[in-house]
Length: 283
Image (cartoon, rainbow, N blue to C red; front, side, top):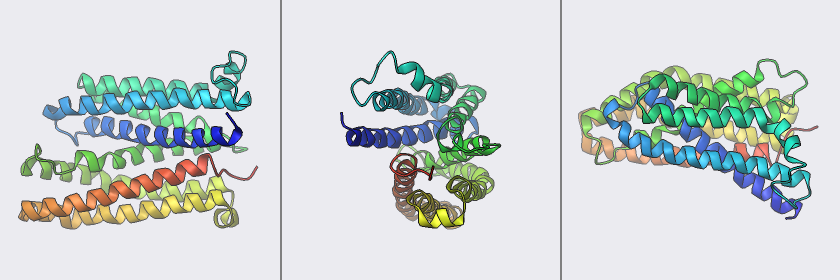
């Protein structure tokens, strides 16, 4: 494969890895924190098994793409280059794979503690590689990246678990909305604050944040997140009350806002995936 083809493959892999990591983290956290009731775990098992399996595939693909890039595109499993690729991605790969297995097992066997530990491990895997590790003095940045990813996963999974499907009666839907909101009120402002601080830190300074492709992609992701946060506030302040007062109309409005959030999340994942592959901070 040519260098351009490998770059596109890396970009596609990063989109898939980010998407399914966030969903796996989110599903695990929704179980661990009680957003989803215990008698709904059977449905959650199928969901997290699917997202976890796809996440594992993209984690392996990430390692193979790096090997191919190091070898000029000739071999994705070059035994001579695999140890070098493992030096760069080994810790992150182990953390994410272990976390994925723990998240699936936690949900499957109904252990909130193991599900939470799985979500934490996957999130921590993001701090063990990438641009956070490229800083001269990473300091607390890898940990803050992990916290940022953890909260983002909790949020990204919401449109799926809060979607007013027919199997979810009005009382249960309202309970889920309220339980999610209690945590989101505290967590989402932290997510936005960390996003702004990390964008500034990883870009280097205000000028690079505004004048480089990398900085602009991070700002685009942040702007999208703020819009999605605004929709989340509407859900909490207006839509939840509407669901309680008039479930038929409330459900219709909830579907619209959650579908809009899904679109915004997709755009944010696209932007951050581009920033970490096509873009990138200045050397």
